[in-house]
Length: 181
Image 1: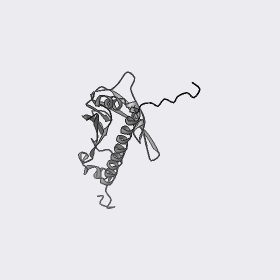
Image 2: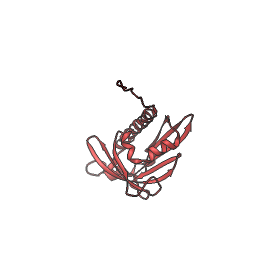
Image 3: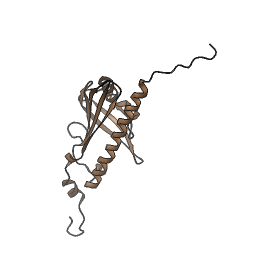
Image 4: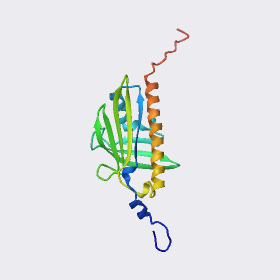
C-alpha cells in the first residue's frame, strides 16, 4: 500500500498473484477420429470456424504445424481487436497440438489440445494456462478470475462449435433430383 493514499500500487498487486492458479481444461466428444480432429485444430487458419473470439489466424510463410513454427492470430472481445504472435510447441499428429502466445521463451499463455480415441470418435481436451503475469491481462485476483472464467466459456463454446461443425460435415450431402430429368 502507498503510505499516503492507502491504495495498492499495480505492481504490488501483480507480485502477490500466482500465474499457476490461472488454468483450466475442458473436454468434449466429437464424431471424428483423432487424426481428423488434429488436422482441423493444427490448421490454425480454421479457428475462426469455432472460436467466438478468434477472427483469423495464419502460419508465417512456409511454416506449418510443427514445433518452432510461428503464426499470427487476430481476436476480438468487447469491441476491441488485437493481434498475437504464437509459437507451436507441440505437434504430434492425432495426439496433441500446443502453442504459446508470445513464444516458447517468454510466452504469456499456453494452449494445449489433446485427442484421445473413444468409440467411433475422439475426446478432445483443450487446456489454457497463464504462464506469467502481465498487466495487459489484469492486475488483481478479480481481473484474472474474470479472465479465466471468460476464457473457460470461450473454450466451451469452441469445443461445442467444433463438435457441431464435425457432425454437420459428416452428414451425407443431399442430392435433389432435377424435376426436368
